[in-house]
Image (tube, rainbow, N blue to C red; front, side, top):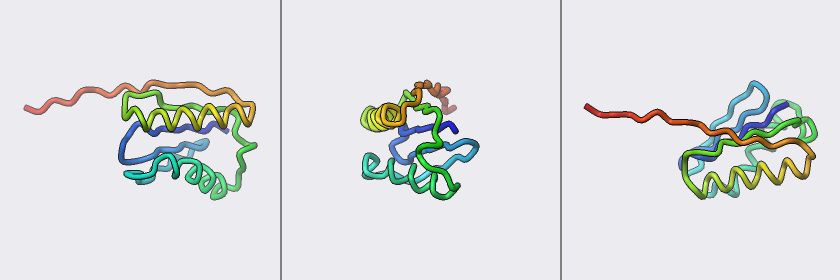
Length: 98
């Protein structure tokens, strides 16, 4: 199962597990919440960290500190579980006001 981590937004954490997508408010304490969100969602679908076969993390653009938290957690989990970690850039289209 693929784990997707997106901490680029300063107001929320997005975690994807297989086909599930979870968004949670994280205006404060993103670094303290991320692992708990992943663990809670794994438990909700009856899976464990050992069921993760690949990790993908959003590389930005976004908040520097938020991105650093996401990449650090992804790399650490990947190393601990022995699974590949891949980065993905999420391009944001500019919006213009008339």
